[in-house]
Image (cartoon, rainbow, N blue to C red; front, side, top):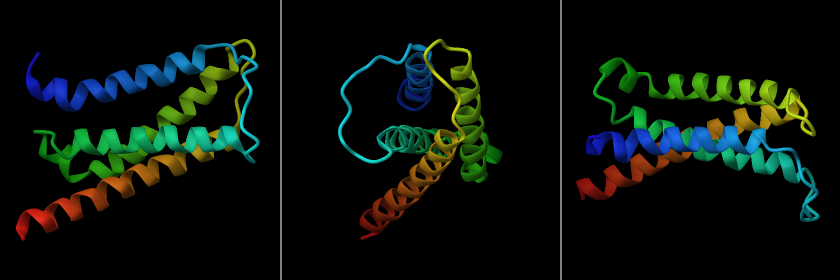
Amino acid sequence: MNSYFLKFRLPVYLYLLLIFVMSSLKQVDIPQPDVPLWDKWIHFVEYAVLGFLLMRNLTTESVQKLKENAVLVTFFFGTFYGASDEIHQYFVPGRYCDFMDFVADTLGILLGIGIWEIYIKIKNYFSSS
């Protein structure tokens, strides 16, 4: 395996696998903090990380079209994965498909894209100084 794969692609693949595995587990009764919409916040943060990792991978991609369209590819792939994750949960005993989880996933992807864009602007600002 080359270093590009290990540094940029593998984290995306492992994170996608982690999301799938966690979605495959029967929901257990673990005490949850007394925070309104706690599960939605989990989805939001989970997919913000995915959005960031996808942007990190795509903006370093050697395929110019992917690099140029990283925001769109990240948004559409991330929302598709969020939708497929919710559909997958429909078939897992003890889990259910929830449209509002999908909304949280989509908003998380947008946050991840935004954080990546801000990170790059800050990085470029300090590297040009």
